[in-house]
Amino acid sequence: MAGVIKEPLQETRDYYNNRLHAAIRYIENNLAEPIQLDDLAACSCISKYHFHRLFHAFTGETPAGYIQRLRLEKAAQDILLRPHTTVQSIGFDNGFTAPEIFSRAFRQYFGISPSRYRKNSKNHQVFPPKKADFGTVDSIKNSYTVEVRFFQGCRVAAVTSATGYNKSVGEAFSILMHWAGKNGFVGPETRCLGIPLDNPDITNSERCRYKACVPVPGIANAEGPIEIFEIPAMQYAVLSYNGPESGISEAYSYLYGTYLLESNVIPADSCRFEYYYQSPESTPDRHFVMDIFIPIEKIER
Image (cartoon, rainbow, N blue to C red; front, side, top):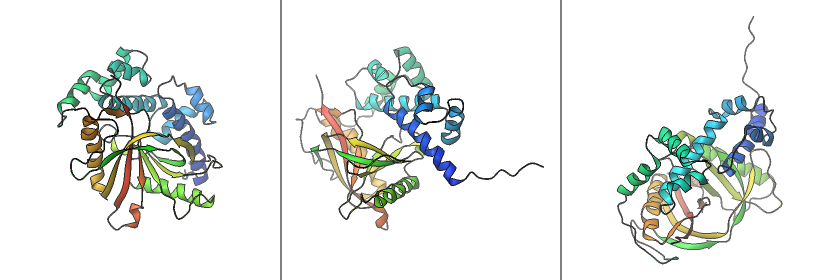
């Protein structure tokens, strides 16, 4: 008589989830470098003979497919955001060893060549680029205010959600804040941060990744789903947003589609982040009061 297959214990799921997240963090931090299956198995402390199947079971993608997708989606963002960098250089920067390999993979995934992708994006620019001084404060359209600030940097703890910008983000914050509260890292002045890693116009909305973050002191250590890293000290273009969740996409479109095109700056090679002044969960209509930070650098002519 066939045995009844039971759902795995939550502890077992957590065990594998934490280990596989170590491999995912390794991939995200090393996209420009060669990534071997043995390295992923080793960093997650899972036998290389079983890692591939476990990774696929938990993510729905093979390790190679996951790496390829992240590289291509990041390259697509770079093509749009780094107009002064050649397509070939962007391919190399994202782990492709030859221009023809990059071009072929890009066309297979997006159905268009990298150079055509860039050309098509230029055709949709509503505002022509014009020079502005580094550090300009703009208040141009739709009551958006953007200013350049030097952010001192901070150490954060984070929990990653990898299933879209939806309720899973709230779940990631719940796990994070339970851990932070248990360890005494939360006080009345604590403010949370969020790092949206993917562009939903490029990445399937159900696969967009988000890091729920909270500042922590130097004594904090990574454990389980909690990772620790530094948000770097550097110049940021900062847009202050006060409005409903439905308007956030438009704010990002303004930052990337208007402000950056009218400024003598480009996005730097670091993550953007959101700084929250209140929890949207505390309002009946999910109202956001936050600053959006985009790392920037001067265009090198």
